Image (tube, rainbow, N blue to C red; front, side, top):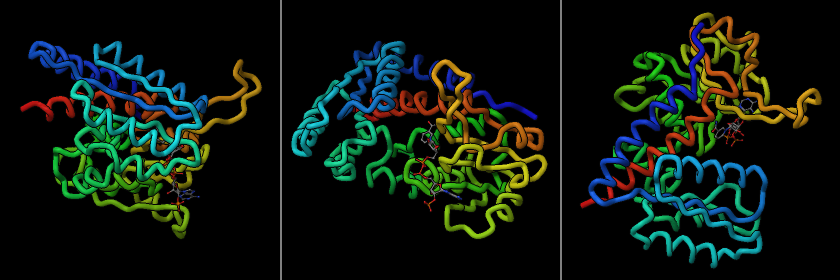
Length: 292
Ligand code: NDP
C-alpha cells in the first residue's frame, strides 16, 4: 500500500509557483491575491490567515480584507467591484460561508471570472465542462487530480467513483476525471445521499474519491482489493485525550480501508495541503493570463 503524501506534492506545486513568480517579477509583475472575510467565524479566520501566510512565503502580493459581520450585500459588492478593477490583484476569493444575510451566489457572480481563482463563477464552471484550459478549476478537486497524477495512478479507462456532488468538490471532481487527457479519461460514477446500494457501486471502483463530510463513513466493506482512495473529508470529532479536545478525521475509516488499498491519502496529510497549493497555482495562472 502506498501512502500518497499531500504535503510532498503540495511542496512540488509551490516550487513550480515560486519559479513562475520569480519569472513574473523579473518582468515587473507580482501576482496578487485578495482574500475577503466577512464576519468572525474562527475556522474561516484560520483559513484566511493560512492563505495570507502562504502568499507571503511565496512573495505574492497578498491583501487580506476582514469585514465586520454587519457588512451589507451592497457594501460587499462594492469591495468586489474595487478588487475587480485593481490591476495589482489577479485573484479574488470571498471566504465561504459568509453571514446568512449575504447572497453568496450573487457575490460569486460579481467576481470577474478572470480573477475567480476559486473557480466557482458560472463562466468557470462552464469552462470546466467545456474543457477550456483558460478556466479556473476549484482548488480541492484540482489538488486531488494532481495527487493522482503525481502518485502515478492511471485514470485512463479506470472506473472512478466520486461520493459527493457539491459544486466545491464532487461535481468538478467528476468533470475533471471524465475530461480528456492526463488525470482524466476515467469512467465516472457520481454517488450521493440518494444513491441506492452505495457499496455495490464503490466495490466496482478502481478509484474512490470520498467527499461526503461524514467521519469514517467509507468502510473496508465498501472498497475492493487494490483500489485507490482519495479522502477529501475534514471532520472534527471529539478527542478528550488531545490538548484541543478534538481531532480532524477523514470520510474514510483509514485503519480498516488502507490495508485493502493500492494507494490512499491520509487525513491529515493528504488532500488538505493541496487545496491551498492549487489556490496559489490558480493565482499565478490568473496573473499570467492577465498579461498582454
Ligand atoms: P457537502 O456537504 O456540500 O456535500 C457532501 C456530499 O456528500 C453531498 O453531495 C451529499 O449528498 C453526499 N452525502 C452525504 N451523505 C451521504 C451518504 N450517506 N451517502 C452518500 N453520499 C452522501 O460537502 P463538501 O463537498 O463541501 O465537502 C465534503 C467533505 O470534504 C467535507 O468533509 C469537507 O470538510 C471536506 N472538504 C475538504 C477540503 C480540503 O481542503 N481538503 C475542501 C472542501 C471540503 P446530497 O447532495 O444528496 O446531499
